[in-house]
Length: 208
Image (cartoon, rainbow, N blue to C red; front, side, top):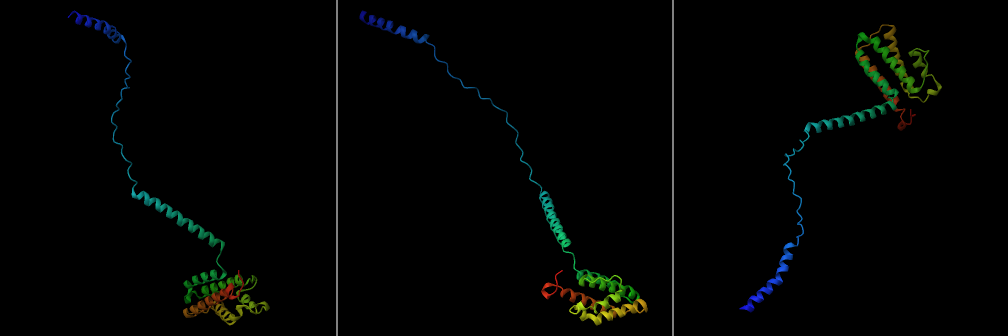
């Protein structure tokens, strides 16, 4: 019994310093993470509204207008670079004489047709005689030596016939009938169209 208590006492003496050392030894600090900061809940973000259809339509119309305007300007520039020929101008002027096709306006009709003829021949054949009357001007053309191969010779009789009618209207107060006006207009138109075609490269004429 005495031996048991003695053994217990010795064991206590051995363990006491160890327990005292462990009790006094400081423990390392425990790392505590930073606290998480909670944010307030944000409002719902609204998506942008879709572009109205008429915006797209307006843009398309603006683009289309720009294209049409560009094409029109290019076409206009091309026309300015290529002015109408003498034949085109004469035919356009001849169309305006239809408004004068009545017996009461015979003189105005005859004067205008004669002037159209003279202007066309001057421009088409490059013959300018400002000091001659229209009748003298047209008659002199058929007497020129350098006009022997000209298409004007084929219309010599018609030119004289037109001049006679014009003179009768202007100086003898002759009134052309509507049928005579239509016939003269058709013949003058045919004359202009034929002599204009004779001037194109494919018909062996000169290119203006």
